[in-house]
Image 1 (cartoon, rainbow, N blue to C red):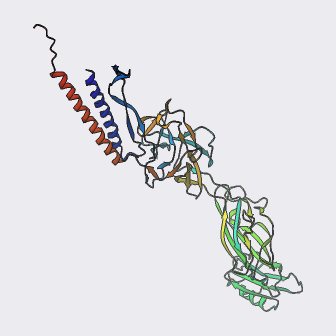
Image 2 (image 1 turned 180 degrees about the vertical axis):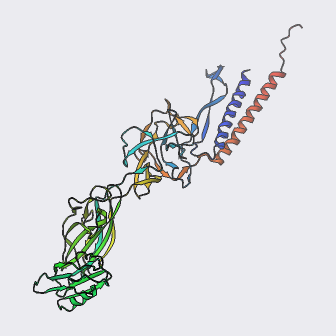
Image 3 (image 1 turned 60 degrees about the horizontal axis):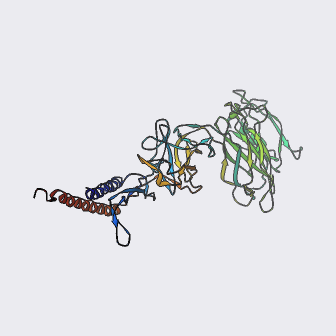
Length: 517
């Protein structure tokens, strides 16, 4: 009977080998699958005696599957374009949790469940390091990663504004202008209205006119132009007055009044042809936007005054814009900004003035220099222009999409254009990968043979990196498996043949003991 057990052991071992090969082929297209190999080992040996030299005469008792080896080489890359898919390039396993049990997998076909958890195809929650306000804490313990599509990120008030711009060195210092608005050009003025002003540099140059019955704004323009020291023109509903010698104008009285409504014109504001304005959108503490105007006027060679204003309507008023800040820019003969030598801080609303929407007062800095301390504002010959504006405020936003970076960071993209970390996927390695136990669904379980896992950030401490929008294919090679299949088949058939021969010999043989003769 011992001779029958030997081919029987070969049949059983070959059958197990065929099963392992068949399992490899069955999982040829399974994401992240790792093929296995059966390793045969011989059984114990019986001693039949010794030869003349004293050497043991032994007979083997068959074979068995002594071990199985898992092939952990990396599978092929399969691009999917799905944001939640991830492939591990190099060493490591995703750490997942299923009903309180911690498992490990290379299957990165991840998705979001109804609770917003990042999960594997069997519903296991992917573990990693959570983020608070966009900052990942990788020093704590791993937790299930939560990604709430549609979650809201709070607004951020503008704290810094930067303008990369040039002011035209050839803009010139033109005649001073004063512009008043509010009365239509053809409106009849009330009799007895008075407009009087003087040249600020030469008080002897004055103008004064008291309206007569039937006068219009055009009548006032004609009177100013006839004075010789000043010129005037109508521009829409605006009366523009210019001093001939280019100096400032000082108004002593202005009560030009609409005869029909009794409404007076608004106060006059100075402007100049050698000026430039550029708008910048900033955000308040509630996330509402405001258009702030940066106004520049050349006052001397290499010198510009600036005024930063906010529309009066933004503070619940009407009339002239609210001034948030003002000052002077000075340039060298090469057009390099020399003063101010640092950022302009404290650009804010005047004391006692509040935003109409109830937000905190705007309070930001104007950064005049780059991080390398290069001036962002220049003054060279060429058109005044702004090539870029930057500010760090934003409105509230909702999470729309996310992507997975090489280091496992999950970057969320919000509707307000902001990008923020939502968490970081962790990877785990083991002292002995082949000691892991396969539990199905692409999962592995640690064992005494595998050792304890070492969990960390992808790309550090020997851990692989992640590739978002891709999956790792099965590492089963069909050509190799077919070759192994042929060998296993031949082994099975050879052992079956041996078993049949042994069985026939045992069944058909008789033993003549000579009894009864």
